[in-house]
Length: 168
Image (cartoon, rainbow, N blue to C red; front, top):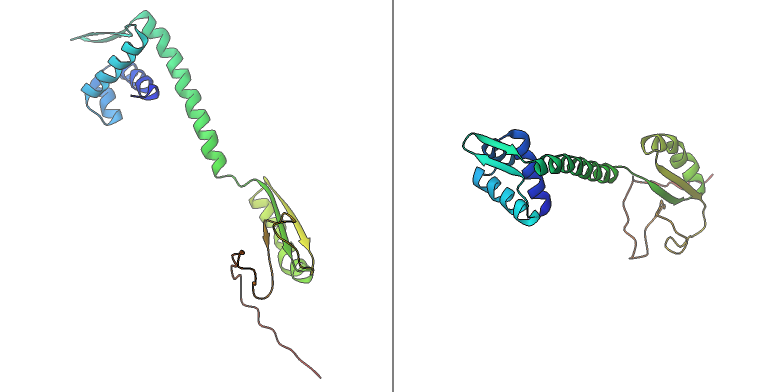
């Protein structure tokens, strides 16, 4: 059994005042909660709770340990939520290449809204009609007009581009 489960179970039993009430919260039986507490006390080599038919009371060591466990569980929750919140935040540096005229007309005007939506993301554009090596030059993505000839790139069609040649 892992130490986190033992500590969480001990804290829950102490706060609820009974194995049965703590077991309901955990979705297990009171016997399972009792075994978890027994395992914790056995591992620590101390008695944390006095058990009787009238109820549960914490020993002096149990009181001290409970406060430390509460702090530990709070710290664990903070650490876990800071990572999971960070998972949903887009951050870093996005380097984009696009053809010059197309980039100025269709890409750059959307940059302020994109930046407002993802404030922790740094955005860099290279608007050029030259052929660039995306990997060697460190681009994260490129917008190109035409067919993709390199089989290592994964093209995504943004929209159709109809061209018309006119002469007079």
